[in-house]
Structures are given as C-alpha cells and as structure tokens.
Length: 87
Image (tube, rainbow, N blue to C red):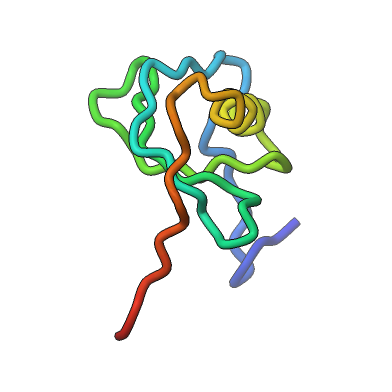
C-alpha cells in the first residue's frame, strides 16, 4: 500500500514498547471547539520534551490516555485556545 506521493508509510512508534509520560506542561485547547489539547510532553527515554496534540480519537492508545488525563485535570488547568492573528 502506498501513502502520499507513492511512498510506503512507516511506523515511527514501536507499539510493542509502552509509552510513558513523565511530565506535561502548558496544556491549552487546540481549537475553539475544544476537541483537542496542545501541550509540551516529556516522554520517558527522550531527552527533550516535544509538542503534542492530544485528541480523544487519536489512533494511538497513549494519545487517547493523555487526552483523558488532561481532561481530568491531572496535569493542571487547560488554558484557552490561542488563535494566531495576522500573517
């Protein structure tokens, strides 16, 4: 099966290894409809934190779990959506 531009998609995440979230900071709503949450996440085994968009329909279990943790308040309050202005 070919992906975009005829390139075969590759699986970046090894789903046989559990994804462990060590820390989450600066969660904000990812859109005005409040259906996703954008935050910075530090995953175990990685030296840097990464931007992450948590969504209840994420195809990966860790994405759905993180969304639920954020909604529950585990990582603090969710800030308002920041809409970019201008070019």
